[in-house]
Length: 558
Image 1 (tube, rainbow, N blue to C red):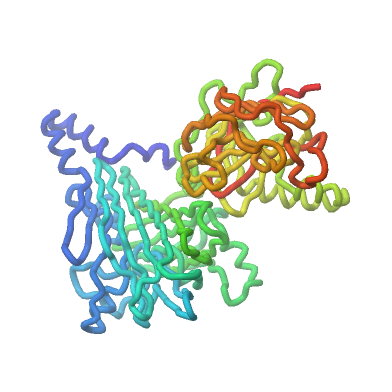
Image 2 (image 1 turned 180 degrees about the vertical axis):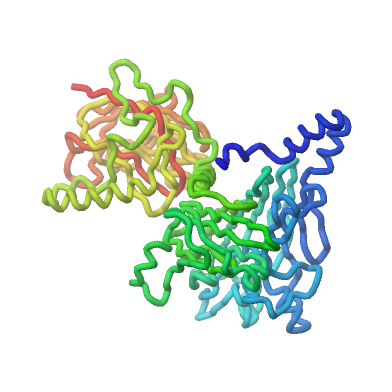
């Protein structure tokens, strides 16, 4: 079933049915009964419900070290997930309603969880927030906010990561939301982690005990592991077959199949019914992401990262929890919706005005190539070297640049590179529409040289570099003006339009019909003692964060 047929919210279907059967007043009562709400069991959990049916449950018990059993049950926080149609508990871990047995297979894997088993910081201090066997813990501090709607609920949480000495070494702001559709639930997991100590915190681990992971309920391990299978970008695996990144042998050929997947899906059986959990990894999350799978119901990925003071780590993941099975095509569509929400061209887009050509045809990447070095280094390469490097660059390009609903899109990965025109240009007029997301940063290279600047001009950390003055500037200039004449940006998340005229060594630029650069020399960034190259490729600069372009038109000038 294509997911386009799934996306009408469940509450609307219920309301429509109720209206037809009961009349409008009764239907409104039914809809109210089936709306989302938060329910609290003080000191145990906060549960999001659709009507009286649980959707997710946040386990928030304070650390209790009065007995071995109480510590075992309370040393870390996590989220339970429930089946979309009947409220069946689908994840492992303490429930807050009955004792948690230490006979559970691998009881440290719990629900939807985030942590690392090899953390170092300070003067040789270590922490394992996965097993928490040496005094470590993750502790709930506060529910900062809760929201609900007819088919949606979210909460924002403050969580402390505590070391072996019981002191807080990192603070986390976690936002978890759920949106219920007729045949699946969409769970979004967003975490911002910041250091609470001086110096770096090194986050590390192994594929089984670090990162963000999903663990199915223990009955999957004890009764139905042989029925578990994984669906990956290359198709459906055999029951019981798993693929895992081998941290003990980095040359293991399997590792290439277990790194930087855009998504992974586990299909498992609980009480005779099959469910599928799709794990979506945002390309902007730290990379490489190393994946792990187990037939007993745990899967996910982890990364290595140095958390620096004043530079929080933000990660985004999405879980699609559905009943039954799914397909590679549906998983890919879920992934695209996650990375590029609400992206679509309008009628008439990508059709060039008279006298211009379309550099982007609105359909595919024809006319574009990956980036190889820079003009100076490319000039030193033999034809054979250049061809080899270009092939590798094109392969990388296709992993991260794509066409989404007739819009040219970069997925936000830190691993990608600039997108370049296959043809070189000398003098020209260039127009293009561009959109960056909040905290975004990008630019347009002219004749292969940086750059006409694009960024989120309301993001305060960028102000020290001049972002508050606006986009459209020749930011890398040193001798000639480098900032725009006026601030002409639309806010991040909205479309902007450049009109760029490049003649000789000078550029004139309008942003949203306002003059921001007036016949200013573009300096040669690669060879500062030389003028700008007479010809060169046009490049769309990648940066961390999603980038969108359309209506890219060019007219060559004498």
